[in-house]
Length: 533
Image 1 (cartoon, rainbow, N blue to C red):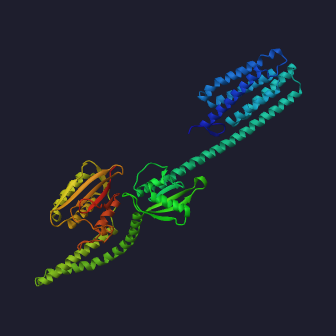
Image 2: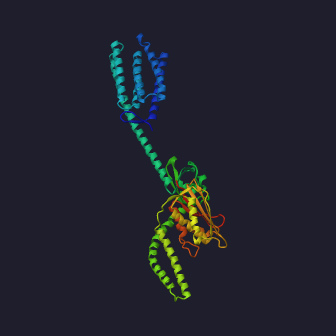
Image 3: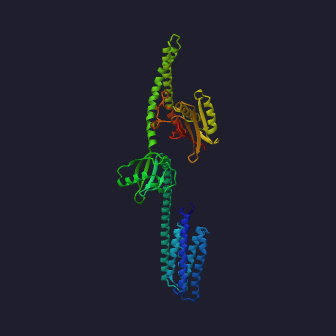
């Protein structure tokens, strides 16, 4: 904000200073008009000297005229602020001195008091005593001149001295009040800036936290809502203020009940739209009086369940990693011994079959150990920017050459060939391989295995998506909830870690992997990948 500096570093806002000067000029206009009207209606003491009869009206009309000329200069800021203030005050001192001399009315000198006080308030500092000194010299000079001409008596010099003391007292007092006002104004502005900075900081913190936050008034009016709350509610609406009833009727009803009783601080809210999530709401009263409101913390139950699962898996991972290391040595010895035994020429066919079973199961156990160890030493993704469709075409060509997938018909439908994503290509390769292998295992066995890979963009969320759908029997509804749990499997030859690892890889790259129910038969999984900036 532009600032003016008024005397010894005191600051006052440019806008406030000019408004005060306009108010001061309005007072001077009214006063000069009153003096003209007093002369017109004969309310002025006429001087005994006829030579001074024309001095009063000439001075009054001149003062009114100059004040009118100052109106455009002041209201349009056509002259420097300081020059205007100094000019107005000096003009008043000269004009009131002449009016006092013309009317022989000593009371007119008191009209200098508002001018001196106004100047002291507008320009606090050493300029205030200067105006008082100029006015004192004018009053004493006019009084001494009147005594010299025989118009005044000597005691009137004492009255002039008292008037001068009053002017000095008013100037110093007004200057002191102005300095205090400037100090208070500067402190208030600093606190306003601090409060604005604190408000902005709080807003940024609220926006960045993962917990949904809503601030609502007792009438259901939403004052603040962060991005996490929008996501939990499955909405992306206008900025507040808005009504909580329109956002989530269940949450509004729970808040209304809590305001009546305030017995339970938390409540469970069921998702009210397909894109929303079940969440737990916690209510906290904030503010006081007319500013009292309720702070609502929203916790996504899916996120909470995942966090609890991650904590358990972290502990389990450390335990299983240490166990896996201990198992690998005897497992390797068993596999090696079975291999040597299988190479014996004297081994009966039945025993050879048993040896093959031993080797198959040791390989399976070793695969489980490898997957467990990969969880505990997961690599940091090396994110790269690449065009999605050309990369998929090369990848699928590689997959089609794999013997295990040679009977699978993989169809690609990603229309945009130029859109780029930011993802670790090796980890995306691993995710797609896992999903294609699942499709191969669970697809229909009575005909051709068909897998559709579809893709598209979500410009509003800055994500691309890929859907992998097979033509199998789909996933039973009772298994969907446990689909991404580690070690959960419906097959006899799988470890149950593939989908869990695939989802973890997607999330470590800033994306996601989810099962999409419904669709035209078979299982359908959706991968979301961040779009490259």
